[in-house]
View 1 (cartoon, rainbow, N blue to C red):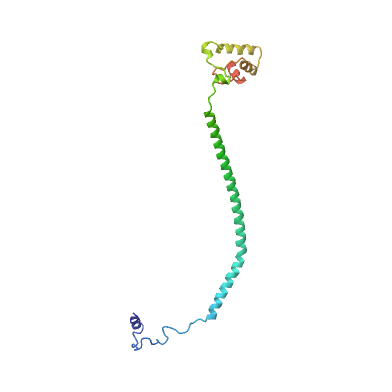
View 2 (cartoon, helix red, strand yellow):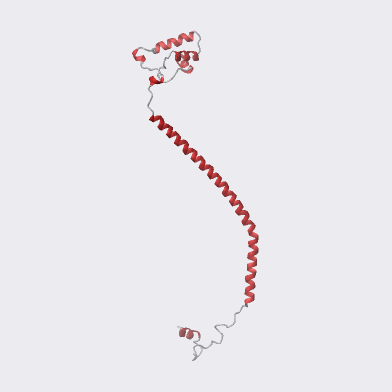
Length: 178
C-alpha cells in the first residue's frame, strides 16, 4: 500500500532508490505554521472570557436556585395539606361505614318496644276511624283551636296519622281542613 501511495504522489517524478528518502518537504512540512505562544494566548483569552461570563451569571444562578427552593417548599406545603385532607376524607368514610355496620349488626327494635302506636287498629275497630278523626278536627276548629293545638291534641291522645308513619303537625291538620 505504501508503494501504491508513493507511485500515486510521485507518478511524474522518477522513482528514487531510497524509499525512506525525504520528499523535499513539499508534502509534509517540517515546521508548524502557528507558533505555540500564539495558541496559548487564544486559550488564555477564551478561558478569561469564560470566567468573566461565569462570574456574571453566578449571582443569577444563585437567585434562581433560591426562588426555585421557595417554590418547591410551597408545593410541598400544598401537597401536605392535600394529603391531610385526603386522610380526613378517608377517615370520615371509614367512620361512616363502621357506624353503618354497627347499626345493621344490632338487633332491630320492634315498633312496640319503641313506644309507637300500631296502625292496624283501624281494621279491627279498636282505634279511631278516619271519619271520627275528621269530625274531631272540625269540632276543635269550631271552638277556634289553632292547627298546632289540634295537632298537639291528636298526639297526646296517641291517635296515629292516616298513613301511620309520621306524627301530627299543624300543616297536616291544615291540609285536612281544606
